[in-house]
Image (cartoon, rainbow, N blue to C red; front, side, top):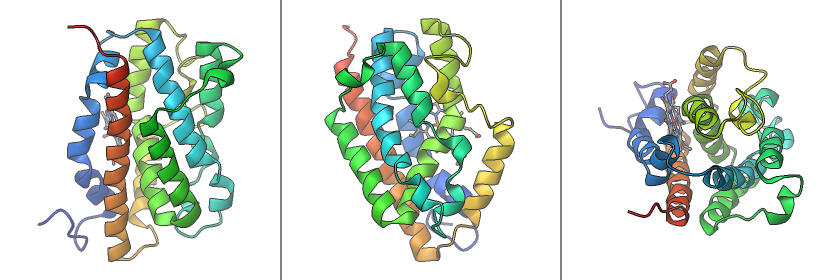
Length: 222
Ligand code: HEM
């Protein structure tokens, strides 16, 4: 079966399989490996958190309007929203004036602009970006949280790691199952599903570009 055969594979499996290789790339990027390996200072973590703020701003600014959309609407859930949590983390990491020094890397600007464009113009594309971020945050995000708590001493699920703490999702495994059912039922024909898969790959590539730029900024001396 080829990877884009949508006839016999559930859409949630298809999108997961299609992004598997890129997931490994993101996971094993120099920046992520150094961050998870405890080799970087808290400033690198703060800089990463700051980049996420721009991405979630783009994902969430239009969320309210998108709840009425037949394709994207079912995915938009208040318990997922991360902007407020990111702002608390940034206030903790950078202090009360965190907004004054907030800067997006060029790769982050490109990523956030694409998310905003999808949010405005293409609900199917928005679903691809929604999946790539929120399902990842509910999964690998939990590993990152544990490492961050260990490495920089944040309180468990407290300030600094609120982004990874989904207070209103008591059973993440059940939530992810329900999310995959939503993906399987997405109101899109085969061609549109293929376009969504392609956008998901683009979303992973946009993430990897941000990680690469962070890797350049926080290069460990050999
Ligand atoms: C070091 C970093 C990362 C680790 C350790 C990690 C780890 C994981 C793990 C263990 C899962 C499987 C969860 C499950 O089967 O329920 C997962 C799923 C996922 N991750 Fe990551 N991940 C990382 C980075 C990323 C990044 C950068 C992205 C993209 C922005 C991402 C997106 C996803 C998505 C979308 C899923 C859900 C796959 C699916 O079930 O459909 N992850 N991750």
